Amino acid sequence: MVQTFQSNHDEDGYVVFVIDGGKYEKAKTKQFRIIGFSNGVLKRISLDSLAVDQQWKLPLNSSEKLTCGHFSDNGFNFVVGTNQGTLFIARLYVTSRKRSEIKFCRIEDIGKSNSFDTDFKS
Image (cartoon, rainbow, N blue to C red; front, side, top):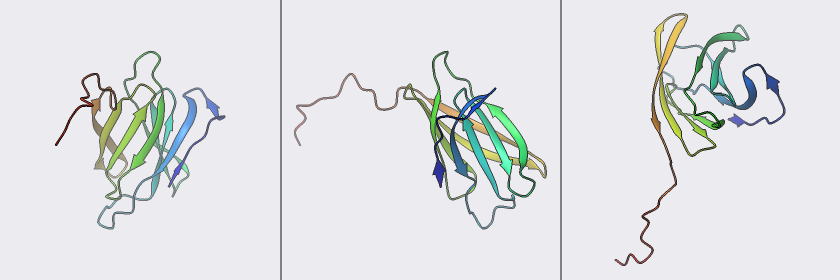
């Protein structure tokens, strides 16, 4: 489930998405959501305690803003998109009971192509 908000303001920017933490049966993590803010802040919210477990900040360009996010059903992988065509493909690593970290790769200019050949014939 993905929810998108446009009018919530916070010191971290405004909320742009809430993504479900997945339903992978073998995952030993408790249920959670990741909330994405326009300025690149990601907050992991525990549904057990209804509190922020952790937060991270993605490195964005000066005018870049987060626009969308999606979590994989495996409970570990997720992707976040920006208004400049950048994708962050990430994996959530649980390092201890109360600690986790994310590792990600940044792919820029998704969907932009200056060399598309329209005369291609098979």
